[in-house]
Picture 1 (tube, one colour):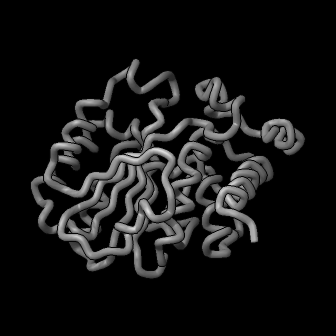
Picture 2 (tube, rainbow, N blue to C red):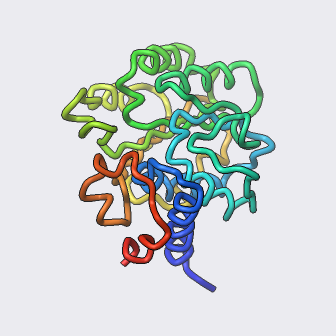
Length: 239
């Protein structure tokens, strides 16, 4: 039997293969969130959850994780996931900033649990900040809301902290009287909170590395943000 780390290496390779085979960009973003998307997916039943993606790009991560977890392979692979091309996704935004508001609305009107996956760049957007304040104001009715933030400190142009620092928002969340977890190098058990009934919304801030596991991407994630990958490059990248 292979170990969890060995299994993850296989999924990482599969993420690269899918991205290459289907000409998907945003590969550093996919690698940034791949591990926690995979770990969280093992806690989910897609039939009983609403999945809201504020980070629908880097879709190779979702495809690889959900192929492994649910045995799902789509008829067509898309750069960004949404309800029209993935049965597990209730909403995938095309313009950054709207996903959290949609997730909060979904959680308020449904008995289903709601997972909303955000990028750290989402926290630079006014719509997201308004939604955060709304979430905190109505926190007693949002125990079924789970929000993850991929905090790799990069967006398309440069480091998040160089463009518009989001540390004040992180501090606000940490001080808020809700469930807030701070993770680095997450493990499966770190997401056990997804299995519990909670009375307050949950926000999980995950410190990640853009391009994680592939030194070429880690060293220059901005350069490779929109680049696609050829199949003959994968072996060298994994060395």
